[in-house]
Amino acid sequence: MSHSLFSTAFRATLPVMFGYVPLGMAFGVLFQVLGYAWYFAPLMGIIIFAGAAQFMAVGLLAAHAGLMEVAISTFLLNSRHMFFGLSLLNRYTAKGLKKFYLIFGLTDETYSLITSTEEPEGVDPISYYLLITALNQSYWVIGCTLGAGLGAWLVFDTTGMDFTLTALFVVLMIEQWRKVQEPWPFALAFGAAVVAVLFLKQHMLVLSIALSMVVLAYQAYQVGHQHE
Image (tube, rainbow, N blue to C red; front, side, top):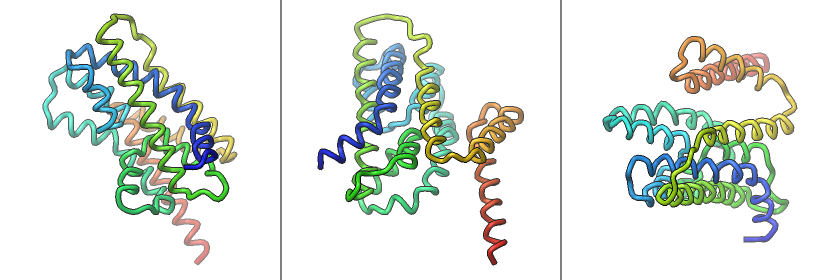
């Protein structure tokens, strides 16, 4: 691995690191409250690696939810990744375990970095994507481990720590704007979110993404029809 590749990927993932580590710590602390052994928190970060789903799991486990309820809730929450994946089909050309890991490790933040940053000149894009994904997951696992360790030894107020994820999304949105410089996607996302909140607040994320995809698909159809 070249120094240029690692340094470029590390600099690109710094905003994610500053978000994932404290957010992972918050998860680790909250997970400890449930009474599980400390190592289950980092293990979830390695095997599941889905921040929002892991936080949701804390609430579901605390409420003694059934397996079916957990499965359906997780599917609905993470269904947005299907839309992310479709837009990366031309980028994720790797095969075998590399492709499997890229798919497994695709998060909101990783997607944002892959679509808004460029790999060093002369470097295989797949190597860059793999390193971005691996670094992001390592930040999350480190955060989960630190939080679980602290939660096992200390008791403190974690109020407000979950806002880290919101702040991270704002930073990534600004990076997307700096690259795209086009108001239409952001206006579309805002409009879809408003409609989703008004009509299906409990699953607003899934509905807002679906609405955005329908509008974008219609626009693509219109453009294709005009060129026929």
